[in-house]
Image (spheres, one colour):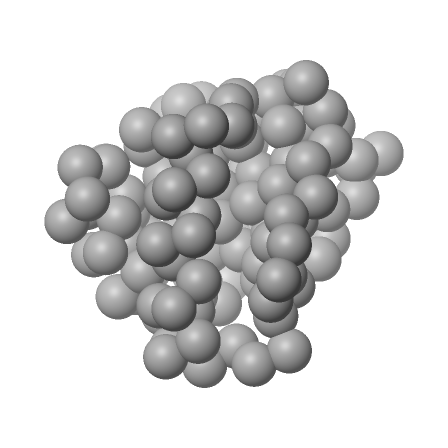
Length: 118
């Protein structure tokens, strides 16, 4: 699966996804740092990439209806450190094996995942 990691995520997350068979790039890799949310999410849609972000704006389904995108994953973690992010990453990959992401919004917190759309 193809992913784009927003600029607010540690680049090690993209590397972790690649190590587990996914195609993952970062906003930084593509020179999109500082671009508006709409530019980033439109680029994801055009490229067929699901977006991962800490940005709660992407969880607003009125602005970003999940059925228009290859997938949106918004991380709602109190501790947004690299270490905690890398602890949550395997859980996201496990969920990908059982739950479709295309056309959906996943809101991932410390202990659960809420799915909207589909």
